[in-house]
Length: 285
Image 1 (cartoon, rainbow, N blue to C red):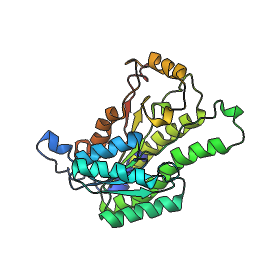
Image 2: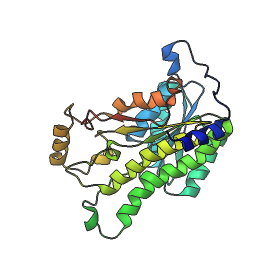
Image 3: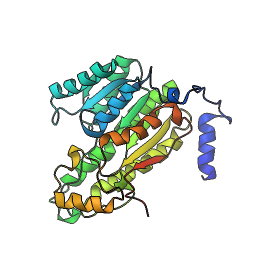
């Protein structure tokens, strides 16, 4: 860490050292989210839904985000009701266009009003690149769409929930990155997606320094996971994935939730600026 960064952190949090956190004595209690509010974008399906379910099982109340153009309100409400019945926590649904700064701000402000606070935020919403070789894409719309959802959406969320964290003096911001932010995938060609996810991971590290005095910022980088985001790809392409992944298969969304729970909980109070790869060994040298 450079002297300039150390100087910024000292200016942000004041005289060192800061007080130690008060932690539970039992290890399982460190992973409890009871009394906390978690907001998860893209949580009506896929990875986001499994994370929301896991957080609810750990005791958190849930703000579940969905996009009405992709997920009907009735489907989002049905997902929320499943979590409510299974866990007994409060779950509210919020429709939001993640690429709209104004909508994201309004949604986060509404969640704070409804729940009283936000303690944990998972910036998870994302879309794949489906246009093939970048130079063959017709126009620039495909590029801008991926960057707008996968990167700009994270920025809008961070900008607004970060203000709540700063006001409260605490919070955990978790970005869904990707192993594609670390390596270049084959055989599919997805330069825009790779670039967006690499930017997300580095944004998380940068915010970890910027927010050092009041919140933690980390990311989780999944490998190939069985979700709707890859349904458009052929079995031939996926068979190549299985060959290149040491464990020989795609992961299940539930196999990611341990990393997200760790980063949300008091078990990770000394973890910030980190990226946890859950990729079946794909990124190993």
